[in-house]
Image: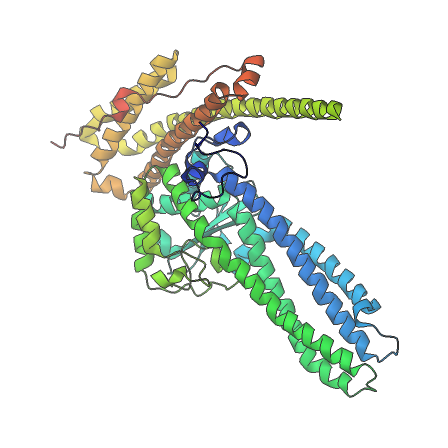
Length: 355
Length: 183
């Protein structure tokens, strides 16, 4: 009794991380509150909760970045005016610009919440189709929505020979699934169903919300960063020829601003890169659960991997949303930091191990 | 100090009870909704079958027997009353339809007909939807039953008189492979 492991909260340090911890996330029954549909091995409830949280963190960080950029822009401009009592850390114009940027960010957030899915659809050149135009695709989407127990998403088609698909939306009630024309032609009904099941997984665990927010903000930050860099090249020269009381402060502020304008888009990019890999596995598993047919998804992924047609409408801001990387790097080195997708071979391997 | 701790515990317990009770109610409604979804799809199938048979008649002169079976199965399924009766009748419809689809393969004209093709797609999809609706129903039942049986939510379930739900059992005939004779 006395020499057994002490289960006190601090007594558990020395042994290797208990295997129970790993098992707990997969097999252990979840607490009653989340067990509503906790019957499934694919824990989309936890994933959805994480995505909700991440979306809010993302929005907060984006607003903070906007405020910092705004302050730097304002302070730089004020420094250029050359007043004697200027303090770079308490610039009135800086605070003013920061407030303006926060207001813009809030408005932008509202827009994203309302029509983020439409922005993403149009960015990728996807056109919504009616049930009369594409009855089979509509049927398949509805079947998967029934299997998942969520409302039927809207259905869109990208007119390209490439094989790909994605889902977007800010909630399970307002979401959309888009597939390429090439995908509909190359896959049989079951394979198409498996791909739609994968996208339904993204809808169910709210990857669509986080992914859409990331896509829209990555685009915006790249835009703002670009504008700042252009402005600095343009306005910097003019002001430095001024009377120059604060030239030193302005130069430093300008350098900080330029660095921030370069770093912000890279940081946004890193957020985008970091999100997808685990999610793709979960969506694959969800597809297998919904269709009860992992083999169909395996053969669909094989066909996607074998296709060599590039997706010309793919966009750097939305690439993480697709079922396979639209820039077509399916190799093992795709596990590197900068890839949005896990290698296809590993996804197929995991699916094989499901059955 | 002690009073505050007791108060905190009481609030936590009441909060848990409320959340769990509401979760159980939501689960019960989800199960009921799942069941209704199956009915919706079954109704759709009843509506589609006569159309399909009508279009197919012209092409499948030799197969009147199959067409009659499909219609007969559909009619008896619509008139079924007890759940057991309904289960058997639905299985008969699925069997008859499976046979019909398999036979249709050997009629190129029929398969090429635009109307028939779209009807077949609708029926295939409806069959899938029925299956997926049942799958979802069973998933909901499992979630709800788990909560009714598992500790500590079972205490709340007993207090609120939540009963266990029944799974949808796949009828024997539906799991058996469809027999097709192609003369």
